[in-house]
Length: 116
Length: 111
Image 1 (tube, rainbow over the protein chains, first blue to last red):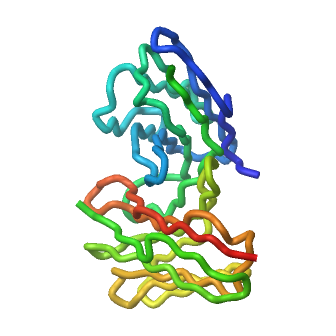
Image 2 (image 1 turned 30 degrees about the horizontal axis):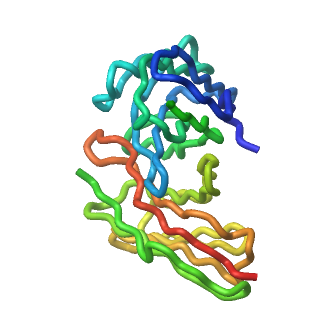
């Protein structure tokens, strides 16, 4: 079992809907990440929060909006998505981040998102 | 930017056989991580290698990092159907860049 919990496991939404993905960890990690993974591809980084501050935004469209309410929680708010946004969305956390941190990422099981 | 390559792209082996997956970096690795992913699920952390020549084992899986810290191998001994999945190597980016993944190796183990 993973120590990073993601909800929901599956989500189907229309292009006009607003929904949120949630992620929670209680390992005391100070870095949290959102990744997007398409079929047969490695995960692609979307956002990184370090000490609850957004430190990396990989030019992700504004229809994706991250939020880090506290050090244990990470949300991804979705609005006006497109069918091509359908993918597995993975949350991860690590003790720290950056070169030399020696902090492996621990992943949740992901949310399978389908946009209709 | 740092890039990771993996070989082979996919692998089908008979149960009980040994196999090796390779990960090669274009630059010196400061931290190399191996992950396993089952279809549609999250990534499971297997091992982390930091020092040149380092070798780690967990159950029937052994990972090594070469002396130059630009290549890592993952070796599975006496493979089982439970080893099937996608194996990804990942590395801390150089010069403040983000964590990067290799493209993955898809392993199938036939009973």
